[in-house]
Amino acid sequence: MSGSNILDTEKIRRDFPILDVEVREGVPLVYLDSAATSHTPNIVCECIEEYYKKINSNIHRGTHKLSMDATDAYEEAHDKMVEFVGGSDREEMIFTKSTTESINLVAQSWGLRELEEGDVIILTEMEHHASLVTWQQIGKRTGATVKYIKIDDSGKLDMEHAKEIIDKDVRMMSLVHVSNVLGTVNPVKELSKMVHENGGLVLADGAQAAPSMPIDVKELDVDFYAFSGHKMAGPTGIGCLYGKEEILGVMEPFMYGGEMIRKVTFDSSSWNDLPWKFEAGTPPICQGIALARAADYLEKIGLDKIWRHDNELSEYTMKSLLEFEGAEIYGPPIGEERGGLVSFNLEVPHAHDIASILDDYGIATRAGEHCTHPLHRKLGISGTVRASYYLYNTMEEVDKLIAGIEEIKKIFE
Ligand SMILES: Cc1ncc(COP(=O)(O)O)c(C=O)c1O
Image 1 (cartoon, helix red, strand yellow):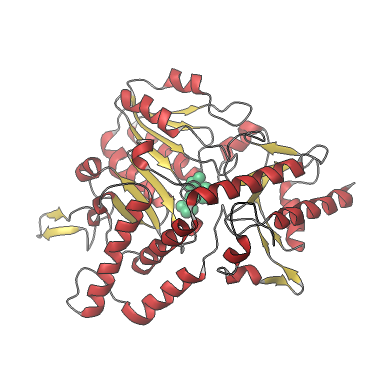
Image 2 (spheres, protein in one colour):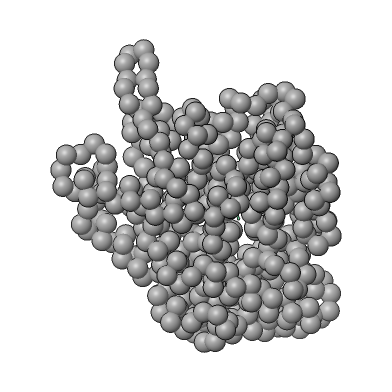
């Protein structure tokens, strides 16, 4: 199978046995839904198997060999993941369940305590519900006002509007790094500078960025960076929150229980060191260790190459889709930077029907509002079909998508 000119997809595909699955007899899988959940290479599956066969046990409180081995591997996984996003120390890397939980951790732990009436939280019109609903609810509970940076016709942030609404009242900006619908890559660094100059903090939602582009939290100058394991060749049930040590250090715990305490009496408790202060109870031990293995795997292939490969497939998809009369593509036009995903509509039928007919051909896409209801209202549409790409996808798979759409056009004409 021919990939882009950038990655050896034939070799990479051999690492992902699921890609050989037939969704129905004689119908091979064409998986174009990695923005929802990506697949897991052999090396990560083997890591999970190895963990349960060789070192499975609880961490940090065991004096036996297995517990010590699991503890070492879990702690080293934090080192790996903080290095993966360009942070400095283990103290800055908290393992959570997902991007959603990472954002909720900051919102509840920092937001509920720090925000009050008169304060402003900045979001963007393209936020995923993980950020939008979370901060909206924190706004309601604290009296802080939520303001949204508008998007322009090409699906990019209106920076003039950003300048208008970012002022001294801003305490937090939570923005998506790469949009899961538009593919837009937001100017996180530029916006961070504006917010920091006004004394606020910045959280970037990297769910769609961390899997496929090199991330440097210091270069982006964000205070928090959230992402999920299951979108970056890792297992489900594991997410990451990078946070600057000086901020995490003064934040209250998110959840209470075992692991996160230093000393407990009947009347009071004190908290463990970072990052364990934020990891109450038995954490996702195996998942964390396997995620670190996934990060190694991606780095070995090269995140810059994955980014360019995904881009190339997106651009090829856009060019091919535009051949269809009435096809509508959302987000930055061809030639501009975008993530490895393309959301689109045809004149008919509805996005849900397109995706379910594509499934008949074995092509897995996603249809709906992709956890961005307000963005879809803004665009005046009730859903889109999203094809999303990762390191194992090929040009031939894009051709299959386009051939599927040709069939759909024929049926509905
Ligand atoms: C941009 C963005 N943010 C947040 C999330 C939520 O991720 P999770 O469901 O892993 O918490 C997603 C998932 O699709 C996403 O695309």
